[in-house]
Image 1 (cartoon, rainbow, N blue to C red):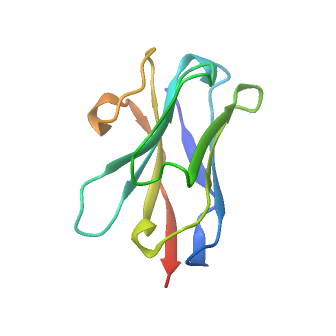
Image 2: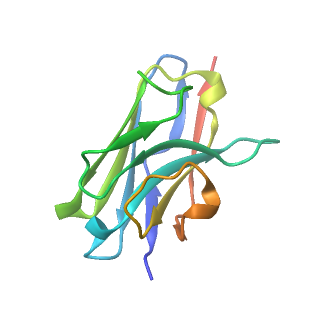
Length: 124
């Protein structure tokens, strides 16, 4: 069982930056592919970015490429999402997720463990 706790959300203005963190309870977080998803009102849970177990492989949604960066520190059992150039359409609850596999997946159903989410609100 893996417990994930997100932090770092908040209310910011368009163009600002935020850095989300996801702390994992397991000492073997290096054995999990990690992903960030977001859920906006009236929409489905969308893939934002994913990172493989070593951090060498990264995948990002087209909507955030060039603005958001995912990274991980396995020694600290933590995954990060650096968000720059935030837009109002980035407003959502952001979730961290983990899957015990080798490959990054873009579908929520492929992840076994989820955090409780952190709200990001971007005002125009």
